[in-house]
Amino acid sequence: MTHLPLLPQKPEIPFDSALAGKIDHTLLTPNATAAQINTLCQEALDYGFATVCVNPYWVPLARHLLGPAGPVKVCTVIGFPLGASTTAAKVGEAQEAVNSGATELDMVLNISALKDGDYRYVAAEIAQLVQAVQGKALVKVILETCYLNNEEKIKACEIAREAGADFVKTSTGFGPAGATTADIALMRRIVGTVMGVKAAGGIRDYATALAMLDAGANRIGTSRGVQIVCQNS
Image 1 (tube, helix red, strand yellow):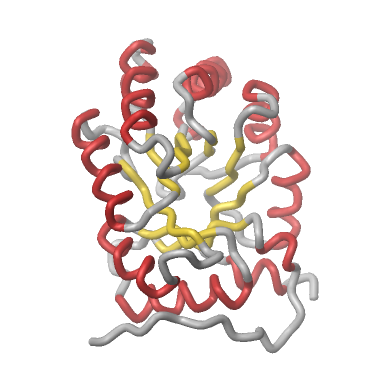
Image 2 (tube, rainbow, N blue to C red; image 1 turned 30 degrees about the vertical axis):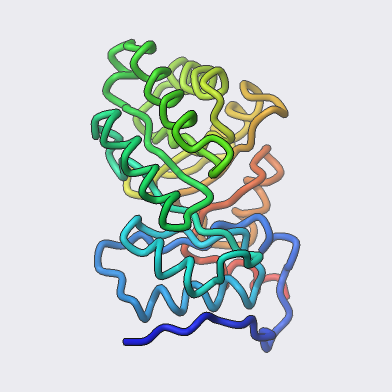
């Protein structure tokens, strides 16, 4: 199948363009098809989403469809969804993704190491990945907050900040629970203004998206981007 670069089309109904610019339009299902990636990218162009977030396999196609210097960026996931890959595997995955056209990377930290108190390992892993893609891609660190207590969430945010990451992110969307406004407020309090905070996992409607932004998020990850930005039209 031949895939031609896409051009933006004007949506037929009004939508919240300001909110759209804060959304990572996401498709991370294991059975996604090329046709679905095409639709995802077309919607991202039409509505002006910040990025499309896809699995690493789809990065080259997404980059091609969106153009090499288009307004919509390509985001992909690293060590996803468990965070239990080795550091070398995560770094290699990140480098390949950047070489394929990704400019934002959502990496899952090593949850087991964090819970075991091996903070040196967690910090070194994030720092190595940040250094490997420095100047080429933003790094968002997924905490998977549903598995952490507040002390662990605070420590993870501190580690990510000190390791040079650009964002902290709540969830993969594959855990037993997703983003909460309480977690967003906590994360924002710890990282201050020097980092972004991304809310992801279970965000399916306009009111929830706005609540996450009000709590301190400046990026939303969701597979319901079109529905959300059109709900208040």
